Amino acid sequence: MSPTEWLLATQLQAPSKLVPIDTAFAVLAVVVLLPALRPAPVAADADRAERTWAWRSRAAWRAVGVRAAIAAGAAVVVLAVCWFVSDVLDLFGVGLSPVTRMWVAFAAAALALAVAGIVHGGTGRRVLAALLVPAALLVPALGVNVEFAKYPTLGTVVQSDPYPALDLHAAPADTMPAAGEVRTVDIPGERSGFPARPAIAYLPPAALVRDPAPLPVVIAFAGQPGAPSDMFTAGKMGEVLDAYAAAHQGRAPIVVSVDQLSAPGRNTMCVDSRLGKSATYVTRDVPDWLTAHLPVTPDRRAWGLVGFSQGATCAMQFVTAEPSSYAAVLAISSELQPIDQNPQHSADEAFGGSVASWKAAAPIAQMRAHGLRGHSLWLTAGSSDRQFSRNAKTLGAAARTAGATTTIAFAPGSGHDWNTVQWSLRTEFPREIDELFEAAR
Image (cartoon, rainbow, N blue to C red; front, side, top):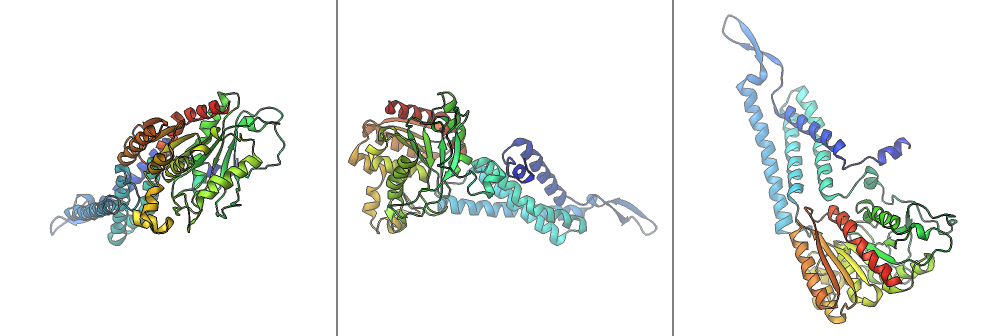
C-alpha cells in the first residue's frame, strides 16, 4: 500500500484514533485556559522578594474566569443559534441531535478560548491557542461524523467517485469469485436528458461468471445532499450484499445506486420538472441501460427499491406511482411527501406552482389511487428520530390499507443518520432480497 493509499484508508470513526485525539484536544483547551505554570517574582515586603507560582495569584485566576466566561458565552450563543435554525426555522428538514449540538458548542467554546488566549496571553499561551484553533474545527467535526456515520475513511471525504469504472468488456471469471464488485458506471439520460452523476453498481459473484443467469435488481437512492456512492461508503451496502451472496452460492441482486438529484444540494423531488426529468431518468433510462448491459431479469416483479431520507421518499414515490414496475421497497427515514422547505416552495420549484399537484404526488395519495396489493414494504427509522419514526408508522398504515405487506422497524438508539441506514441494510434489506428472489422463480 502506497503512502497515499494508506492515508486515504485512514479510519475516521475508530475509537483507537478518536480517544487519543479527543484527549489531546481536551488537554490543550485546559492548558490554554489555566494560568501559566512558571515562577514569577512577587515583592513580599520592602526588604526582600520571594518567588511564588503565577498560578497562585488572584490576578491569574481572574484571567481564568474571564477566559472561561468567554468560552461559555460562545457555547450558549451557538446553542441558541442551533435551536433557532433547527427547531424554529427547520432549515435542515430534520432536528439537530443533542450530540451534534454538544460538539458544535465545544467547537464554539474552544474557538472563543483560543481567540482570548491569542489576544491576551503571553508568548507560550498564544502558541498553544493558535494550535487550538484547527483542533477546535477538526475534533468536533470528527465527533459529528461519528454521530452521522457519513465518512468512514479519509478517502470518502476527498474522493467523489471512490470506485473504479465498470469495464463492460472485461473477460468473465473462470470460477465464481469470493466477493462481488462495486464499480462506477455512467448511465446516460437518453430519454430524459437528465444530467445524472455516475451511478455505483454492485455485481455479485454470480454476475461475474460466464453466461450468468438473470438476477433480481435493486435501484438505490442516497439522501439530499448526497451522492450515489454514499449508499456504499457510508451505508456499507456492499458488505451486506457480499454477506448475502456468501450465504447463497454467490447469488445476490444487482444493485445500482443512481443519481436522482444531479447535484449534491439540488432537490428534484423525483418528478419531471424545470429542475430536470428525474422521474423519467430513474424509471426509463436506468432500466433501459440495465437490461441492455447487465444480466438482470426482465421480470419487474423481481425489481426493488431502497432509499434513505429524500432517497427513501423517492423510492416511495416511484413504487406508488408505478406499482407494476417494482415489487418491494426498503424506505429508510422517508418523508411523507416530496418537500423542499415548505409546500408552496415545493410546488413552485417542481409542480408548476400547483399545491394540488404537489399533494397528488405524495406516496399516500398515490397508494389511494393505485393500490399496492402484492407488494412488500419495509419502513425504518432511527428510534431517536421522532419525526421520521412517525412518518414510518403513517406510511406503513396507509400501505397496509392499500394492500401491501408492511414491516415497520426502528434502529435502536440512532437518529436521522447513516447508523440507521447501516442497521436497516443489515437487518431488513436481506428480507427484501429474499422476496425478490422468490418472485424471480
